[in-house]
Length: 126
Image (cartoon, rainbow, N blue to C red; front, top):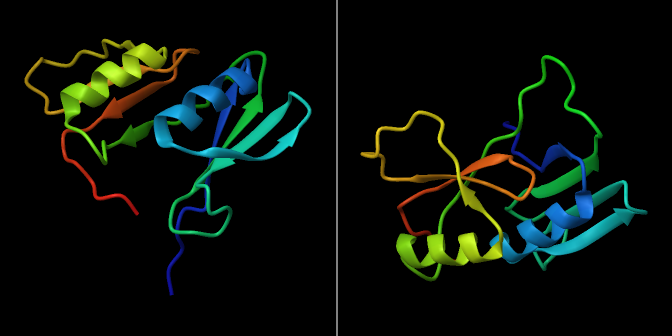
């Protein structure tokens, strides 16, 4: 028997802003909300499917010694360049973490500076 990822938790200053951003990026919806302190977003089918949900939880300052969550995304209905344009239009911005420029992925940051990568491979929609 094995485990699978059911949810990813990201501490952030403004959960509502990041919920909107990640809902647009991943075609997710808000599944649960506690005031403006926590948003859980996930697939339109709801909880318990093959994709994990993303919990955005208010944290005014990063916790010392904690690493930020790193998310990789793949385009499902367009090529990497078109998806890069879409993500930048949504508010993502390029992030420099020392990459060489030869990578097959783009390192980006969401509106609060959390880094994520846009990979080159296209995945089929679920």
